[in-house]
Image 1: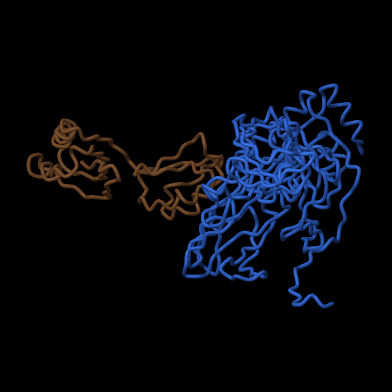
Image 2 (image 1 turned 90 degrees about the horizontal axis):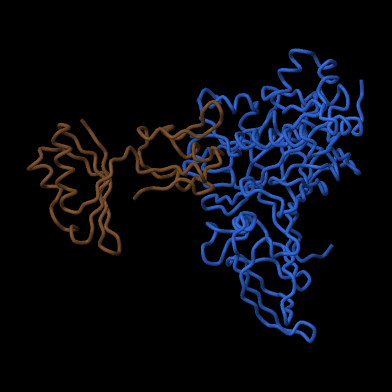
Length: 388
Length: 133
């Protein structure tokens, strides 16, 4: 029997909605079958906690007296964008600091702000008739700021490559350390618990979907950059290559520093661990079938990161069950596998989101816009001279 | 028996042939795993010492009497669980599986397996792994 968002929200309000995680639902479907499980379960929670480079924060500092039109801006020696209005800025997660480089970057400033720490704000300006001040040097906390919200242009990839290195040199990549001569494989997903793998055709996740982000209640604000829904899928519709992405928004003032963490990838750069949870309403049997997916049915490609080109070869298609087993066999060689995203943290987030809903603190928001299927990616052509 | 000990020499003790005393007077054998002297002339020596338990203990007393800090360790690598997010990136760096994920996907650190290559220190995205020297 089909359910509506409103009916499920009414159950949440009454405290009798059945809410379980995307890992727990697998056993329930095996026990009861899809039809019965779809009647029984109202919401399935999904989550992920991984490094997501395309993240950052919009901040408004408020006006000083006399006021300044901030041009060059830094927070704890990390440059923030000065091309917005007088005291607005965007702080990118991957921006390195001028003193500590990638060891302390934008992501670390964002974490420190959420943790309530004082942050050193320095800004310069030409000075104008209406904004006469030419420089400012002060310390601010999250509480002092008018607005501070994460706006992450590309988060929670639906699927992602596993990485390997066939060269004779060790590689330092955003996929972690890759040992020479196919010494190891790294992968980054929460697999059967991952939000966009539980709703592969984005039936319930669109603009306006309410989510858990960094411990706050936030929203899906748009399709993420490099949004790709035209890639290859298996017969059940699950993508086998990096697929859809989401742009996410959330109020930093409601976040918990545990769920937003600075990350450093040696000889690569700064990134940010972002904790995201998305509730999937079980509106019908089709949604129940989607969320019952298991790691053994989800596939990705083991990509050779030693090929320094955009198109890198795949050595093997493997399931997440194989990757989670600790090793993968490639041409007779047993290769150790390591995760890069924290399944432990993802489970904690899925549980937290379930807890919120069971206690009537979080309700479903039906998306107001669905994202397109069949949206493909463009590359960047190098057009010398620009004569076209 | 064998013990791994980390010695820290204050400036006053740096330069004295302490290690030789351990061999001569206390009948101990050792392997120097790492040695360094910093800008303040403070020295650090990581030793694997082998001998009778009583001799090792007497040797440690002798070192302490000479103002040398002695810390018995299993590995110079320390994981700060407060900062660790259990992502698993360090397990990619560790070729001897001294760092691995348990069945709940929590990081476990088998200090006895560590070869002190220190690659995990570089691999940790939250910088939760530190080297004592």
